[in-house]
Length: 118
Image (cartoon, rainbow, N blue to C red; front, side, top):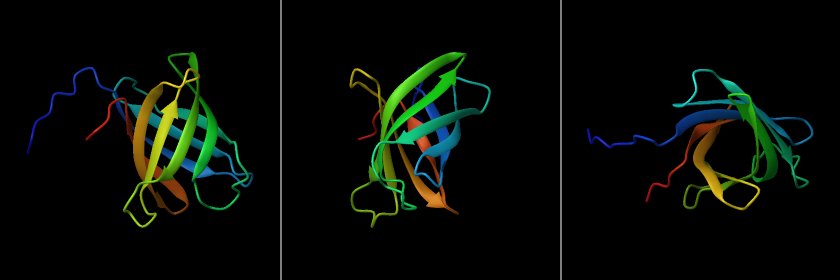
């Protein structure tokens, strides 16, 4: 197995469920916190299907500090629309996190990180 030094990098996992109104509710954890926290994302387009693709205003707190971002969810290329890619961007347009996931029993499950893998 290849060893990679990820010291200082953030690596986490999440799930999202879609509400009847098209918003997302979910939970996450990462290697910098010792608890499971909640995240809430309000849909910014009229996508009330069971699909997760779209733009969302999302919020969560970590160590008592609130965070607000734009979350964009799309399909990862060349995956027959089975793998999703996610990007969290701050209010200044700076990417904060990227992630990937898939749907199991109407729940989007995946990982996220603060670095890009080539």
